[in-house]
Length: 226
Length: 272
Ligand SMILES: Nc1ncnc2c1ncn2[C@@H]1O[C@H](COP(=O)(O)OP(=O)(O)OP(=O)(O)O)[C@@H](O)[C@H]1O
Ligand SMILES: [Mg+2]
Image 1 (cartoon, each protein chain N blue to C red):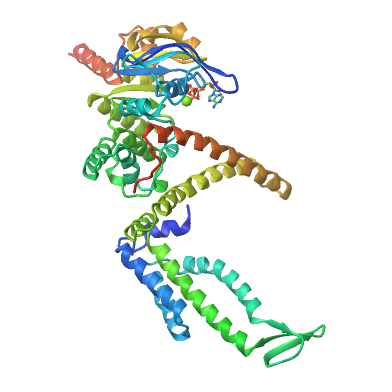
Image 2: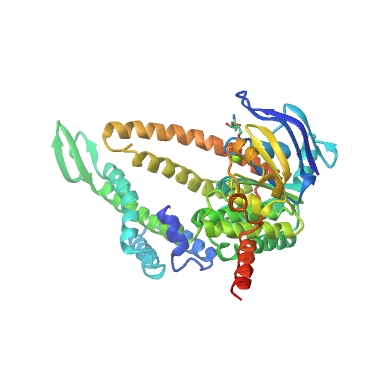
């Protein structure tokens, strides 16, 4: 249902030791953040992308599409850093003059932007490597071995399960609406989406009630064991 | 075991969902609870296990009146389990093993005992093949088996099944019937709620007929289904084997198999 989740369970590295994958990707991620060296960062990007595409065999096209979304946010925000505004034209490499203000790129901003870009992309490829090759349940075991707080583990387990319950519920309502032309034009879509949210809310509450019953039947004592 | 006397239950919106219910688990080993949609089957089960508290009447467990404190309820639920209709509302972990182990772990068992119980439950429901898949990749029928395994691992003496075959295809339904028989053979008492008359006729030795919150009849299964008026009043239909018996004037068979072997023998003697 979620493309990343599906790949996590089907990629060629799914059975590799999760601890290894975790430390590889997190190690490289921290290296990229700490060491400000474009050569090393480029190497990490190349290395992680290579592993994800050629070793774990995540299709190039989907990998690319998955990168596009965060990258577009990244590029937009980087544009804001890259271009600076001032009243006088000082050491701009390139600038334009609009309404008595200078919009331009200076040496300093160019430098920061370049590093920021490489660092973010390398962090992104490291994270993608981890989430695309490691099933969530393995990841939770890693967290457990690392002795993360129980609350965090319980939350991860429950959230992970409930994301899919929520999505299935939403999908069911959406299909029911679509089959009755709920999304045939703008006005209908508008109305359908509001009733989707409303009934999702009611259904989730009903589910919560029923789940309380099954928790009680299984002798739940305020702890989700792992 | 569990017994209800003159139980009345009213939901908060004043719907009287159960009225004057007398229900006794000692009447049979596999007890059927039949009734059309909204008859009150689920409400009755919830009252039996102390999840809802009746407004009138009393419920006893091993001759002791139900108390609604933590200690009493924990003990009750150690003996009684419920498999609810929708598996998604009973599965809390996306890992099959952890979900089945949830109940036993709550009981405070050590991990080796937990593992024994989980393996036993997985084997009972034939879920070994998909036990390593995440729950959201399983089909409805597979999730249902996981939910049943989760209850089996609790090792209760009595298990309530609310509509065990709803939403299952014919093949999986057959397997579910076999599973229910297997569980019964392990010495557990079952209560099966359903509006699938053939299922109840096939499995149960005693049945209660529920209609609009009241029990309008109860008897041994092979007798109760002969009462056509009663079944019609409950907006239900007689099992097909009973209808054959009535309309074609052939003997009453308990199962399809018995019917076929009877006719096979007859035709053999006819041809020879
Ligand atoms: N939470 C609730 N609040 C108010 N009324 C309810 C609630 N749950 C059930 N009812 C009502 O109580 C009656 C019995 O419902 P119940 O769910 O026990 O029936 P059922 O026999 O299990 O039906 P089904 O075969 O559809 O599951 C119905 O009239 C129903 O509308
Ligand atoms: Mg019901």
